[in-house]
Length: 365
Image (cartoon, rainbow, N blue to C red; front, side, top):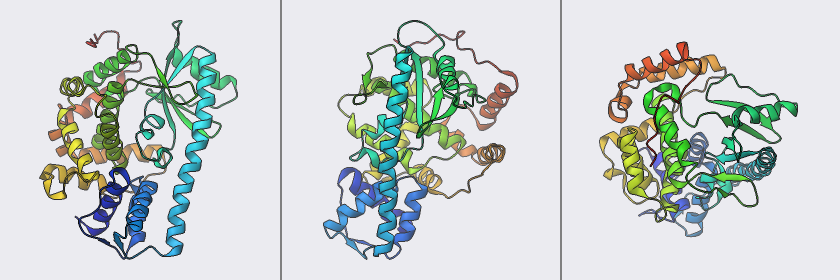
């Protein structure tokens, strides 16, 4: 394990579970550690770990003042962004609720509550799934119309969700929780997840109308979301930390047997087993040597640096090329081969203008 990566993992273990390294951390390139933490979207959490270890004199080679202040600025920025996003999201949920719409938080604030310092979990937007409170209506279209009526530009060109800016928060208003155009598996998972939203009364975040989905929904959505990034884009350490903290927070409340059964049904069992081991490593429960060769390969893929494309067209081309280079991922972590997955996706985008779930039967019971 490269030294910079090893240092970052130790910082995360300290911040998230209070685990100290076996020997004092020796580092002369803290700037490289901070840069890696930024790219992996865990920069504020890593600073928390450094501060804890520094207080206990577990670090050798302290940060110089200028670098420490720069690192602090990222952490303060996260805290400020979190507060602004929460305030704006509350207002949005109240506006929706006043118009008969329930706002479910898919990630963001729901998973941030699992962290020691919620505001240090980086989030750039609000992912929400909205549904009618009582009377039946097309909540997705109604939610978009409410924003348009306020003079807010709504981009609904993507089949899965619309996008708009509400005050200080970028919102993804989801029509579907999953990428349902990938095939029958994701369509059936979509039906299952939506069925779970009808199974329990919502629990609200603080004094808002931001509703938390049931725990089983949250667990399956987190894994499916991470799996999608891993197969089609790029998973990062934030995805692993999210799963680690969710498991830690809800260890006693979750019905893990029901979760495992659902993972097998929807082809997520091999991926979640790998994710479990990686999250144990992030929390300092196991050593690097305990990871299998395949798990190390997944970790290396998670940590690799990729150039971001500015335009959407170049992003899509880049994603397609990455998928073509990643047949091994589909071999070990997908029921379908890479070519079959691509065939489903290309066929759906070319010929499936409207996604229909009505011809499938959900077995959510």
